Length: 195
Image 1 (cartoon, helix red, strand yellow):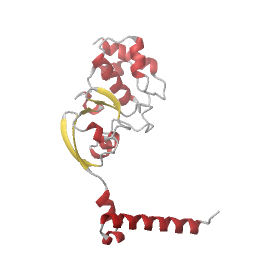
Image 2: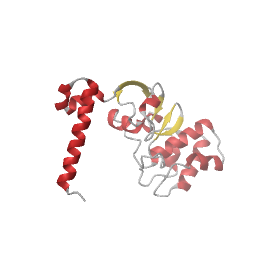
Image 3: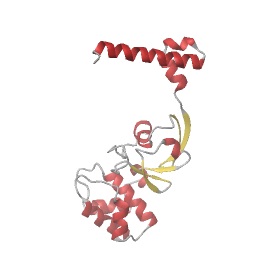
Image 4: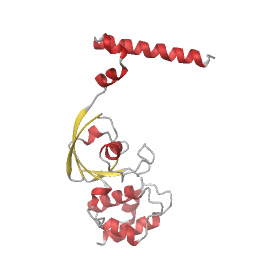
């Protein structure tokens, strides 16, 4: 087994070799001594046009950036939460052209030209029928998953205004509530469907 010094030396030589190859390919040997210049030269950025909560946005961003981080880090819309990073919990749910999607796995390039709605844009005063029903049924406990839950419920009611119990269960299946408020979530969706 190699000691730490040998491992570090090996990493150094690998990085030097990689930088040399990049410089040769770029035909700019002066870049060899400036890693930041190499990163800027080869880091792919794109102008992405989106409409977020009704406001047109143009972002110069890496097209592979997940939509969740675009919303949170670039647009300061922090309602969508990071829960799992693999689109399994629903905490990051937003609407893409009216359909509930998991923003943690949606590259911003896939959303280019689309309309994105976050919990902040669902209603101006927090008076969307689902939000009102959430309050009426005292759904939230810790609140972490609630934005995603509400966005999934709102998308369901937009396409299916009077859902059956089975339709509610199917639509909300990918949203995890660690506090276990599923019965109240279900009841709130039923109430919202009546308004």
